[in-house]
Length: 130
Image (cartoon, rainbow, N blue to C red; front, side, top):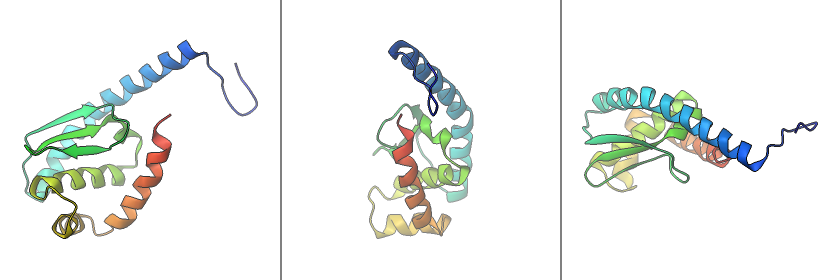
């Protein structure tokens, strides 16, 4: 059903659309993110164990104690500079398993304007989950 400012979908139509969007984003993320992560890790001189793409609802990414990187398929809706920020952020956790000064110094080493990007990423976070 079409209104003047929006399209209204029945619940089953919405569910099908959600599945299609997630499927498309997952495909794009699996094509783009692993090579980008490898390139950034080489630049930073850090090695991670594995990368997994997930449909997450609260995080852009994470790095486990064993250096397994998990990244959200929703990264694909972000501008490239924010994707790179998330990759650098997670890779910085390979050597710094916290958000202390050493961690932020490492992020700043590769992304001097990380504070600006972090604020922009927070604005996107509110818009991601539909």
